[in-house]
Image 1 (cartoon, rainbow, N blue to C red):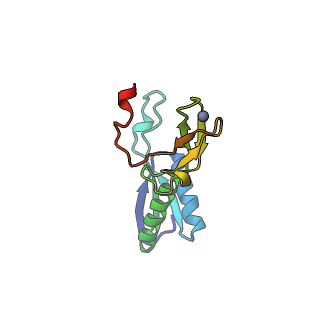
Image 2: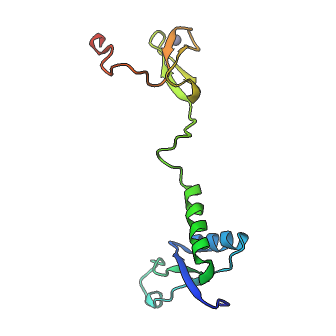
Length: 138
Ligand SMILES: [Zn+2]
């Protein structure tokens, strides 16, 4: 290790993860090193557990904060946020006339469009109607 003030910035869940992070930090100009904790457990025969080692990411202490932020960003990118406001998934609408499903872009959410099969009017997404609307018909 060539760090003057080594600082453990992250404990990875796997060896693959630790190497991804070291590589990512390196490409952002931060010297990082993967060091595996030798807890000694792996010296004993516990079968094929193999998850006892904890690979750690070490960086120079002066770069620790930047490294931590990069690691945060790195993981945020990987995880699609559940409450994404940039949800661009198409909306599927079942036509009340013909029973077939038409697909409309998210941008037409809340509008009335023509069924792509029979040209009947269909409501795309959620309109501001009472949820009980039409329930009596069923
Ligand atoms: Zn239809």
